[in-house]
Length: 128
Image 1 (tube, rainbow, N blue to C red):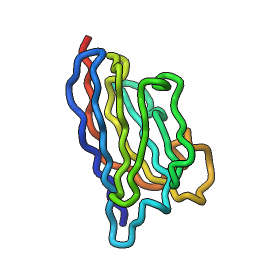
Image 2: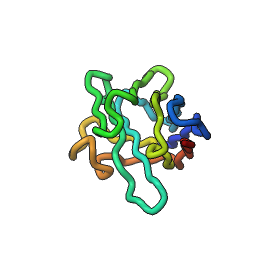
Image 3: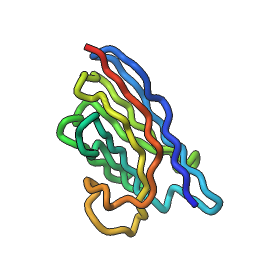
């Protein structure tokens, strides 16, 4: 059983920054076996891709809406993935979810179907 726990959400003014963390655990879990992603869901909208990083950190992918503002990173030794969010905008308000998908899995990094495990989410609210 794999557990993902997000933290770091909160209320911030437009233009501010937040750093989200996602800690992964499980009896035999090793983050080096998983590609990791962040998704978000705003009220009344579908869940959407934000960013993803491959198991070795060799590649990172971003939604166009966050490119240049958000940075995904990971520390496999700590089983933790991060999302640094800068220049936040009210449109970034959403519940942010961490996800893990096996490194040999199929599907694009942008698709939620690529990921097997999900966290419970952390709320990010950006005021104007």
